[in-house]
View 1 (spheres, rainbow, N blue to C red):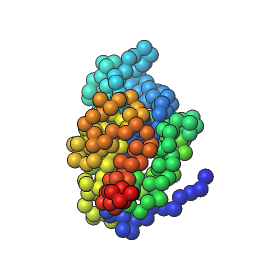
View 2: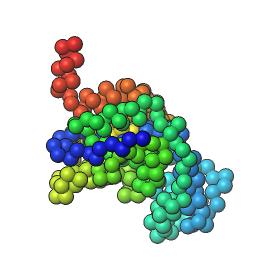
View 3: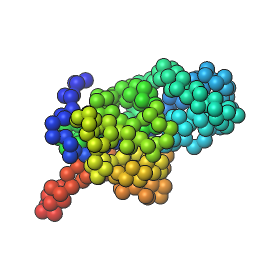
View 4: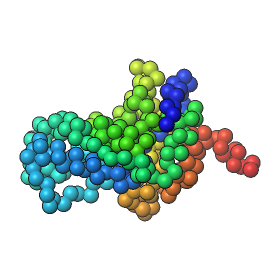
Length: 256
Ligand SMILES: [Mg+2]
């Protein structure tokens, strides 16, 4: 595996900031060890036994929301959930031990990430409900960590329980990577890529672009509120390149 060059920061200010979701978007059915770590941490910190418990529909929820929903469903008081929230984040991060996840990369996405990484007009980062430690380890286990330089930051379930607040966090961090006192990344140069209505909602809450993929647990009907809905890596590439460099692409297409 070659190590890519560090991100080009000079002149990147007008680049398109692509904020990737992980589960159902970059990776498919890659949550077994993650779920196990959450349950183990909740059992250890709160003394709950989750056997037989039916969890809520968690796709698109942050890890902190999922933990809260599980604990509340088992009768744990909100005050106790709040009091131990940081400990749960810490223990999930310590307990999470994924297997090799390279077979779980959504088809074509590794190549698309590599192509986008090489463009001067694209910066790639993350908006995911995963706690940050889980997100980075999960991507490393899938061979995708190399495309997500931590210097560009991201927005994670360990930053805020409410996914709607994560895009703004990610925009602020990406801008701060250019210079500490910089305004958050421009909304019109930012796009969320995700697989659930909750990804779309967080993009709308921050007034940034959103492209939805049907590779996760939702179909086109569920995702109709996105700016674009795509079924595969090829369509996703077209949608993102159209946002990265809209005018020249449109001109070239018109003339071909
Ligand atoms: Mg997802």
